[in-house]
Length: 173
Image (cartoon, rainbow, N blue to C red; front, side):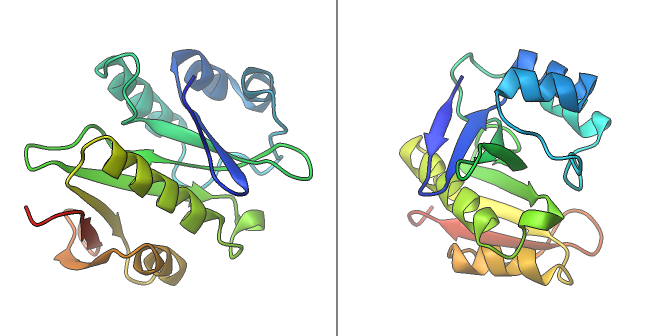
């Protein structure tokens, strides 16, 4: 599967067998990924319907497409699954791609979401995207902070009610 290494993390690309294992439960996921999966799994927003949506999206992508979800594994001291990150599909007609991330509460406030988001931005740039976008709720200060640290700027209201959009363009589009 697709792997991307950052200083502290390994991003493991979700494929159909891994997503099926996640749907089947924590034990199956642990075996499929070969890492420790905390009792608190899954992180916020990764419910079964989100997993099924992700699996359906994957079915529409070419085999080695980078535009997928990634499982975020903390490498040390023991390889532990701490969250997810990824792209909500391939770039749109303007070359803009949307990213998202979610880290288990026990691993928040240690810069892991920022590290994962930076990796996604690097993948997007390397794979030809022209801009990266993310959506959050303005009251989720930690999420807003991740975006700002990664160089995204407030781009007005998001599509969902009450959300805000953040954006980083790699070149003038």
